[in-house]
Image (cartoon, rainbow, N blue to C red; front, side, top):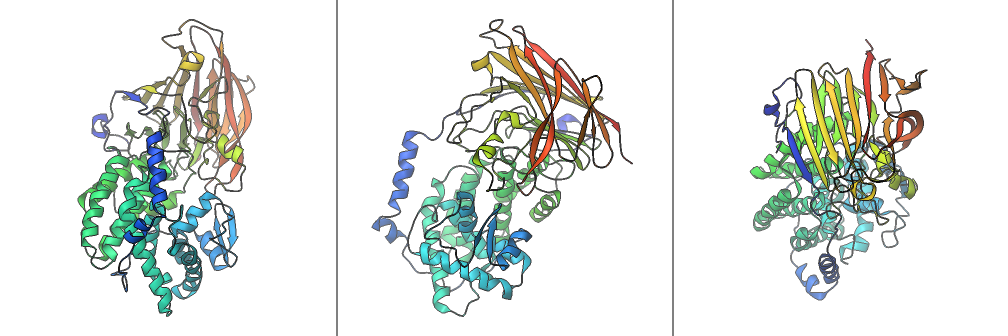
Length: 585
């Protein structure tokens, strides 16, 4: 498996480039089993029992041993909104004075933001301790009144407690500077009870970033509460298991979401700072995990250094990515090939192409995944050219659900679509169903081009065809060549009527597209004046409306190039080319 990365100009073997791979979607469309769901339901019901209440009893600390240095910058706009009396998240806003945790009127995503206490980072970013403490204490008192003594779902969800303990430890001066000794005691008592709850609940949350967050909370308690050495040893063992289950050998994360990987990197980095606050060396497995995760993250970043829009994410800006990577202390080049995580990166002379080259995430690992197999994005320097619509899991919360669900479809990505259907089914409950199970992938590096050839079986069962895509990036970075083919599936070859298809190329809003006179191409002009020529053969080209969800989660109007046609029973293909005709000086 791929495990390291050189950006360009290196021998393929030095970058872990493998020539061929067969990828299988382990678990298919199965979510949690009935036994798993029953077990989880019973476990949550046990929170209300006298036995669990007894488990949470015990002494609470008079103070924390130290304060963690939070190395990350919060959201400035959200911080200023808090100072103005508004708790805001992804477009949803609630008045702080009128906030009532006992009768919530907010969305699930907003609830996670409030319950995790992530807003403490935003608040501390824009204000002094004297300004922020009254706001933080007011919100803390509201939370304590409703949730400190009563164990309820979702407030006592293990992943939320993990994040909560990390934020409390990092921003303790904002919530523990009061002269009200009863209030301070209530905060520390809740912290101790939450830690005891986590001891039993951390391993019960889903594999991935949620379980990492829970175990980071256990370790934070073990490091910051006096007498925590036994909990620290227990927590390190649990976190090690969580990382093995969540982080692939190439540094990707279960669920295939770059946004989730970014989240996990921040959790682990903040935990490392907690060790530093205690002048204790972090375990080697934590450092090793970060060393794998950062190159994988950089591998799905464009020439503008910002995150690509995969698996429902939004294009996090390059400045934010730079600040987070700097905080990790990991110096690495972008990973070019991540087989297990499922992304391929081609980079030549400032042109960067990123391809979703794996089956979609399994339902057990992630709800809200996208049917984006074989889609790609590409950029020219700091300017994005072809993108995905993105934003299904990061969009403004005021948007209609139908729109955000539509952002998960195959048509919302730059790839081929058969009969206007998804390559992997998206169920009404948000989970992914049948579709892509197996993929074939090969990659070759030559003196003239980097080339990927991949195929998937997502349309084989329903439509009797295999989608094969070939993409090549020339070593001068000026040509992105591609071919999309529909081939008869082995079991149904040569049968049935022609299959209608569309190949979509969603353009960044800053790209101005003008069709050529012959109708077989288009001129794409970027904001800087660079011109890319698009040419196609084998399909009918049209220019249609599209949207792109920006870094604030807001949909912006843009355009898409669409190639349509009908695949014959024996198979058909369309070829296309993006050629940089003029580079701005």
